[in-house]
Length: 71
Image 1 (cartoon, rainbow, N blue to C red):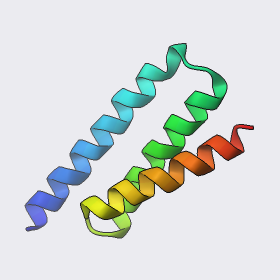
Image 2: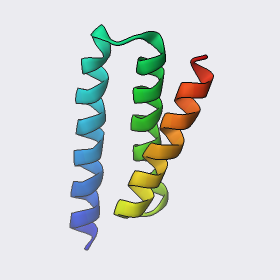
Image 3: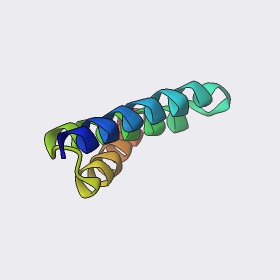
């Protein structure tokens, strides 16, 4: 089970890196939202041990916070 959690964390981290690299053509608000969602997804995955619900919840909360901070 630990192997699956480590793999999920590694895949989430890789996805965040690729998404962040794709932010070049986005508006500042869009960049802040995407970065917040990525950071929230990683944080949610870490805090819940790789749970899908924790990852998605973290991404949602991080996206909202990133959007609001970017205003």
